[in-house]
Amino acid sequence: MTEQFDLSGRVALVTGGGRGIGHAIAIGLANAGAAVVPSARSTDEIESVADEIKADGGDAFPVSADVTNSGDVKSVIDRAKDEFGSIDIVVNNAGINPDNTLGQPEDVSSESFDRVLDVNLNGAYEVTRTAASELHETDGGSVINVASIGGLVGLPRQHPYVASKHGLVGLTKSISLDWSPEVRVNAIAPGYVSTELTEDLEGNKRLRQSIINRTPMDRFAEPEEIAGPTVFLASDAASYVTGAVLEVDGGWTAR
Ligand code: NAD
Image (cartoon, rainbow, N blue to C red; front, top):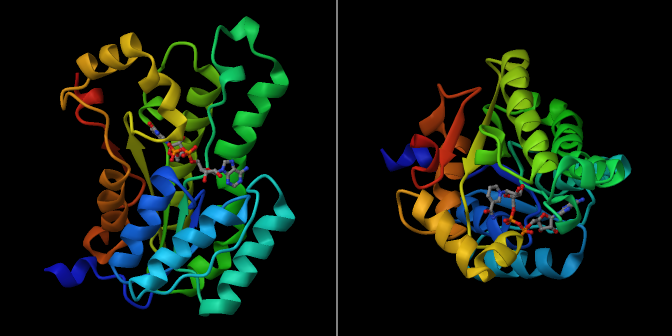
């Protein structure tokens, strides 16, 4: 049975793969046997993730790229293919939710709104379509979009983020239809995970407690808890799963 989860011989690109959830996903995919291309805008963090994978006997090739720059996106796909010969798995994890986009709709500038959409939605779209031929050429190509519970329900004072993640869920479902049966396209919807993105929330005692009270599992997730579900979706164990959104939210959306 464990063979179904084996990713040996597969190559995985992980955007935003330098820290937080992307770091945990990169390590998880490498532990399952995949060669990993961690990618983010700056090099320090992705180089350290690649070193960590190689120190453990895995294969990794860090490539810096901004997902909002189509030249960068083309370059990361080309370089990953040159290095490892194929791209089998794309994890669209790069995402932002900056302070200047938290608030009432009338207080957020349209430029700030656009920036969130650019990274979280357009970036994932650009990476996915640029990797299209590699994903179709390989046997069992798979895309995993890291959405959010904010892709399934509204969250107060986070309308740009929620709009971007709802868009990402829609993109997942639509492209899964277009690319089936050759390439599977799924999304993960994490709840609250302890990373730099949620540092401010966790630092605010009242807010942190209200989130925990609302979460049946009574805690934030650790980034590593998003890795297993991602490995599952990338693997043959999920060979009949496409167009799905897998909630990894400690029961948050079950209420
Ligand atoms: P994080 O801030 O720790 O990591 C985000 C990563 O994305 C970083 O590596 C950053 O360099 C990269 N990134 C940002 N803009 C980029 C760009 N333009 N081009 C390339 N890379 C870029 O945050 P995280 O919590 O690890 O978030 C990862 C993903 O998980 C995001 O898509 C986020 O929306 C999603 N998510 C997070 C939570 C949470 O509670 N932390 C919950 C649900 C979904």
